[in-house]
Image (cartoon, rainbow, N blue to C red; front, side, top):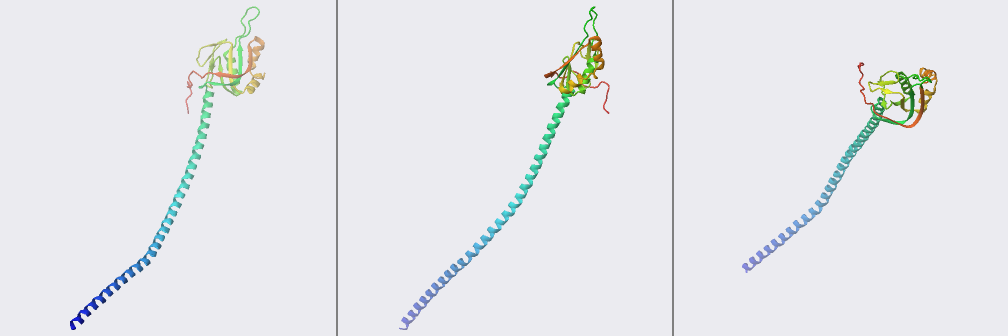
Length: 245
């Protein structure tokens, strides 16, 4: 009987041990579950804070980049403005160079203008040769036309420049050591027609030529043309004696 009681006590102890172990396991499980329930919200808060910090960092970065973009746009606008001004200046310089080249005679020229013709005097009834036109007559008319705003002049198809020199004998003219040109001389001038015609019509101009026109029959006439074509100058533009300072 005592042996039976001992056996029963051992069984009870074993049962109590199992119950205690089970309770302990349940306690651990409950504690772990409770801890997981407490940790999860904490992790969510940290993640939210991290996301907020990331968004704030991105906003600061975007602000800096927007500032750089604005600065670059201002720089680009400034460069475009400078380029436009340089383009306008370049275009203006190109126009000025083209005008200078035209006035210097080194490019062909066309446009409205006037033509002046100077011819030898008519032969007298007894067969004597009339008064011959001279290179001074041509030079006087060319200078007057330039004074009247001529932008380009040619004499018998030979282009004149501001450096052109004239010489010759009665009835002929040589321009810049070119071939002799024979009368009649046809002077074509491109430019302001009204202004040049006004100077040519003024009897106070070309007095010597007008005198020889009346006295010796030297021929002088002029008229306007809707379009004249002048060739380019075909000689040298270098000054023979002048030197730059």
